[in-house]
Image (cartoon, rainbow over all chains, first blue to last red; front, side, top):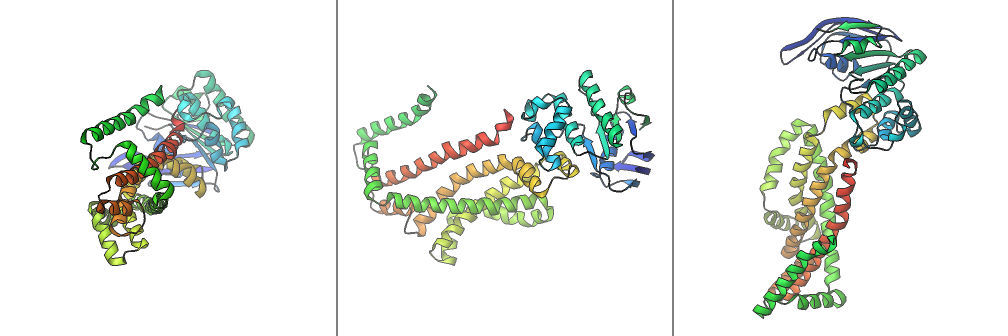
Length: 190
Length: 245
């Protein structure tokens, strides 16, 4: 599904990372670990097509739909939880509500992000990423600040989508044990 | 209790005015009662309502034009740095140009007509809107823009769900400062070269030294602007900030 070869990124004369190579297959969950500042988030931005200034090659099979849970939830503060999710599917409130129910936030549908806890906001962001039924899901520290039960629930939802639709997942975290709970393979970014 | 406390300053002004009028005891400073009587007479049998309507129409047209054109220019300047650099000296020039000079030049170049008056007021307000919206557009959150790009927001959604709400506080600031600026400049251009409106009428009564009528016309217009402030602008304030609660 994805072939990465010789991928590198510099910023302000400083090399963030270089010569990264890996593949991501359909239905695979790949973990990416590394210390803060190693460029994990930048790597995800490149894969998501949000950063096009890089060296090396990136080959996607076809034009996969990419969903992403950013490190900060990036919810529109002036839209409710349901509206935030619905915006990813051209305003389909029915789909948004169903996905919010899946992540255990049915009752928070009409609440603005300012009144959600960080953990709840992260689950809304996960619902927004999953509601589009992505071929590839990019997770940037997605389970940080979730309580253990909510984190397990979120992982279960992701795993269900992987099993049902063959969605590929690239999950990034500085916390290796967190990655080991889900990823079949873990790459270390140093 | 809250209403009583907010009415207290207005009542205090009326009281001070009444006392001052009693002490001075001159037509130079008519009492509030005398001014209110004149206001009633002018509103029921005089030209006050027609003049008020003419001024409000000019304020409305100039305000909408300045907001529309100024927002478009300000947002474009923030989005296209080359255009921003090119237009910046023009904006600075208009910012420092006195409204009186703009009005006089417009009347000389375009004649003493409605078009010149509208253009003069709009040009005087325009740079203020441009600067506020340019700064607003520059301070937009790039992370939200990235998110919208990733989730393939439609053009309509980018405008209605992202840009407009992000810029809403700046639109509100431009609206509030714009309204107070526009109506003052409208009175000025009416005084200089129109034959209707509150500004024209103030000019006439200034020549007649009719202080009661000057105060009656000024008060009537101030009351309308205050009404807009406490209804429309207060509603906009609440609407823009509703998600923060």
